[in-house]
Length: 344
Length: 284
Image (cartoon, rainbow over all chains, first blue to last red; front, side):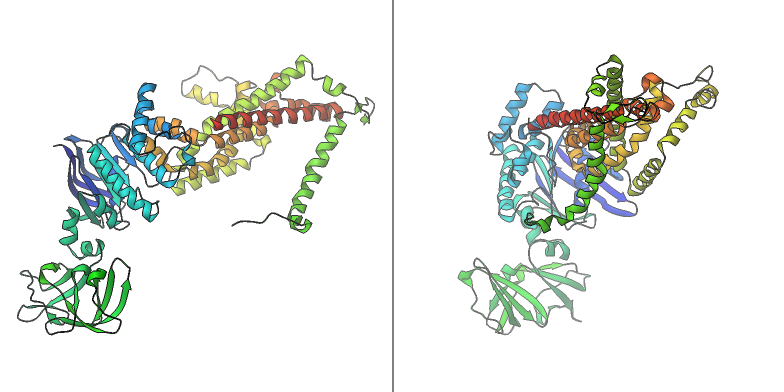
């Protein structure tokens, strides 16, 4: 099979399982984001794919070849580190040409490749500059170009954009995604920024406590999260407890929402995205609450409504803005088709 | 934090004490030595104030030229050996767990507590025919019969490298600990074996540290005068040995002072040259 397969990979540090029996298949040319809170094992998993950590168990298969025991320098991959790890004693051009140079490629070929890569990252004529004289975004691009110098089979990035400021980071996300699509290279990015993952990935892999919690396209993760943890980690969501009465009817807070729980489940959580929550005048059949805070961000308006001690957030655009103010009593509408029932 | 440049005399007060110490313990003795180096030796007593350059003119002999040359070459070889051994060693040490590192550093510090005399006599025993390591080789069947490994150049070199190695490691250690480990990992992902990555990433990234360490060990080795006498033949004696000999046993203070001044100037010139070459290469 063309692509990367991770089979039953485990990594233990002493008694602690950093990565616990992970299975993942990445078809050739896919952009994957490993997403999760710090300490969830995403970086360890990436380092095992790179060969910088040795798995305690399991196998890593690239294009049908088992590479688990292959040392890093024979794996033919490109990696961008969080620190970027540009060689301080070399110029931009020499950094990019490093992989070609140690393989003894002819000078002319090295020069040509450096030129092509510098054009690719929109930094032409930078070859002779010292690395220390570059800005953050430029260093980032040089690190990417250096990793791509040998046209590797796998492109790995460990929190590559975390050192950049917010605006530059957003630009680089788009640029990185376009670059990946142009080259068609299998790419795995580790990030803790869900927005970054949504922007770039074909496949988002949400990890927690060393396990994969859900692996799916971004919009599916957003719309159909596998559990409460994933729902809460990806974007903002309202997580409400569901309780069943004696007759098996599900109740959310005080109102009956007309929901039924899957068989055998007596307790669950309901996840509803803020943009799906409707705010209207109080009426029967809807939840009733008091507006506790209004955050007007210009582009969007967030309304915080206190319903019996639980805060529900509703987001609207200014055009459809509900005309409410703090302290006002409002009705909350939770459209059943937007509600997702999750394991608690 | 930005500090303001000192403006009034009062702002310079913290400098008075170190400045005072520097004058008392360095400027005054060194100036005295420079002055004495131009005095005339009085064979009956000590020396008489004068201004002669005979003391310096005496260097222009093959004998002193070769001793000076030997001293410099020995110090350079010691510096190169120390860095060649200490650099990979310290690099591997910084990759060890914290506990192992502490243990090694404590051990190295304890070697520093040994005086030059003890080091000299310990090695002279180890290199002797009667009780030396060659007896061990004989017992292992590697040699026919025990031999004396001293006095010899190798013995002098071993003793001096042994003495300077802990300093070298302690000077290199902070720089190597701070080295970003991802530099080496990056080189490996780009196809360099760990050994190749060590030589063309770690070593050049720490060029300035290595140059500074070479200079330190060179200056340290240049002052050694006990080990060459204990472990070497007279032809292995350094200029420092001759200075001691002239000053103490020949009572020729002006000549000893002239040699000392000359040694300082030569080593300053070498250090300056090394820094200049280093800067030029950095500018490329």
